[in-house]
Image (cartoon, rainbow, N blue to C red; front, side):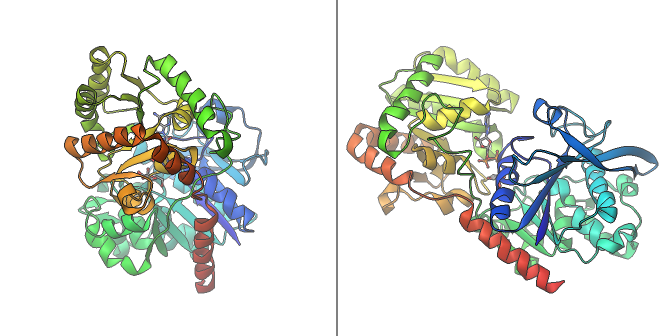
Length: 471
Ligand code: ADP
Ligand code: GLC
């Protein structure tokens, strides 16, 4: 069996959030289970990608309406990833320093998908399955099944995994010319709400739709940023498969990014060394429990509430708070301003820093995830692996992976996204921290939980096999 994953992110080459982690790790676990897995992403202008040794395997010209773009498909020579990586090099549209947020993202994403399929038309080996991730590659199931030019690919089953239905990539019909010729009777497959909607098109056209936790799959039928009706209708071909994590990259015993490595037997001293570094670096009090947040500062993550949460918690509780993230500029500046108000118990690093995130997992005491929407969430899984206790809102994948201490579990959960609920949870965290015996017992248990891809990769393989049989 051979599967091609198409994605905009793949750790360590390109990562903005959890999508990168998933596409950088699931293929490794699939390959280990004898499912040959290839990944194709854009060739970005970043250090990691520029340093790769690659060979060119295909050169072509793609058309977006009347504009032509030359591109090359490159194959990495290194086997270090544990799977084969291909990259689409396209100078004008894809060779950029960032993954998202350009004015011409529509053109960039469509061009990427057309390049992948143009190459597949002549590639030496064709995949048995094409596995697409999020709206950026959501047009592929449509293109494969409807576009005349790609008719020879029509029998290849397609899977669309929804990592986050909030983002759908809609664009207007003025750009319909980007889609190569197809039977216009089927134009409805592209449409949602009078726009071309790549996520909706993927849901309609893919052979199977998955999402990244069972709970989120259920939630999507009631709340999917306008696509709930479609997802209810397509429910028979949808399944929720919980994300896993890469136990090699995320292992406190070997993690090269942390200050001190540790395992179960020296977890207390190991974590203390990491906490000491954090407290020194960010001017925090080592004796107080350290509550951390790592993530995109966006509404879905509840980031708009963070300034008030910090201010309430630090006025009334004996705690430290450290935030790492970037996003909404208003939230960013409010979080910066708070530094003056709580100079010894609060700090924030506004930006993206992979190494710092690992040290926080290794040194903080609690991780805050007050998400409004959380399809899976990987942070809480990393937290468990490193031994810090997650404080989560019961939603999506957080509901599937964190059980409250009062239900014989190991985390702190709340139901609503409001300052009071999060404050109460932080208060429970402080109380737990003050009961060091119970805190350590929970810590010992959580590091044993196995959220590696082993289990979920098997579920994907079952899915692939079932589709291969249908061919
Ligand atoms: P999402 O994909 O919605 O952002 P996830 O919980 O699935 O959320 O994954 C987030 C990933 O991105 C994790 O690996 C987390 O550690 C990382 N991350 C998020 N923000 C930052 C940041 N500012 N600096 C470093 N890593 C970050
Ligand atoms: C999305 C979701 C997040 C999930 C990640 C990986 O970015 O917001 O919850 O963990 O994708 O699937």
